[in-house]
Amino acid sequence: MRARIDVSEIEATTKIRAKYLRALENEEWSLLPGPTFVKSFLRTYADALGVDGKALVEEYRLSQEHQGEGPGEPIVPSGERRRSRSPSGSSSRGYTIAVVSILAVIVLLVVLLATNSGSKSGTGGSNHAATGQHTRTGGSTGSTHAARPRDVDLSLHASSVVYVCLLGDGRKLIPGLELQPGQTTPTYHARRFEVTLGNSGVTMVIDGRPRTVPASSEAIGYSVTRARGRHTLPAGSLPTCR
Image (cartoon, rainbow, N blue to C red; front, side, top):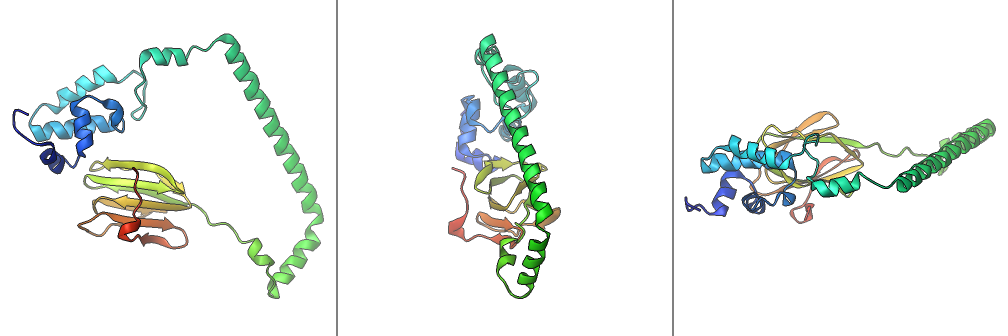
């Protein structure tokens, strides 16, 4: 405010969305993706304003992070944490009994399935030969035994600040976050990925093979499957994580 800099100017300079900048100003940590991103945003924001980023990050770490929490673990009020970790003795015993019962049912089902599968394999030799002959002569049974396609492996490596919305089989894997330069995501597995990239500053690693993204003045969208590989999505079909 003293420098008379508008939030939109900082957003353009840092590539951090305005809603995250306001959340930093108001210390509304629950609106931010997680401690790792908060510290990265604080450093970037401080550098843009010419203030001490290390001091801001250290103050945040001392006041907000709890000992033993991972970088992506949400911050939970201490009173709520104590309540969640101190169930009554009867509830604990009931929970243990329920878990043991479920495990016993699962083991029983596995044994039954294994026994049933073994009995079928002993009597299915002639049927298998007949099915193979029918398939070779143009029958339709071959299609019913076609192998299901395997999952595709995908990870992203950012070379600059880039917005990412990544869906895997309809699930939000990266829910509209900004990756920082040098940041690499975990390797995700799904039958079909859909991704929206804010710019071309990212490399897509598909089944272990790096694929660059062509430069574009607009957001770029892809679908990735094993059958079609990487396929560009039309502008109106890009996935959103809102």
